[in-house]
Length: 94
Image 1 (cartoon, one colour):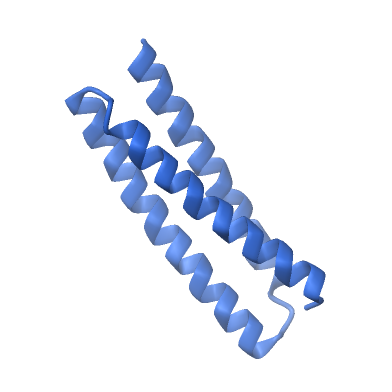
Image 2 (cartoon, rainbow, N blue to C red; image 1 turned 180 degrees about the vertical axis):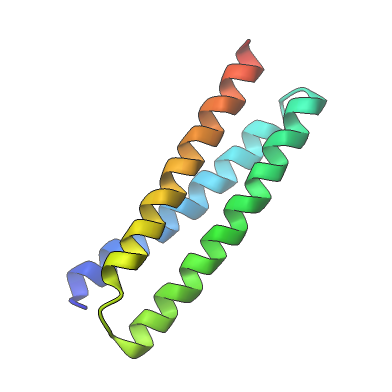
């Protein structure tokens, strides 16, 4: 993997972590039932991010052609974070 791709993956993983942290902060202000739902989603997202981190570390060590698989997982995790945030804000403001 090129240094450029490595930097991009690390940037994406860092951004995913930041978005999860942002969701945690936003969830604190939500109603109890909404907060519980958002917190469950956050737990799921943290597990997925952890899995992505592990896959990335394994990939770096092996340096094999898993880039497409990791990229798919990263995109999926980012989409889920976005959907969770949108749902939380809709319920919070609704």
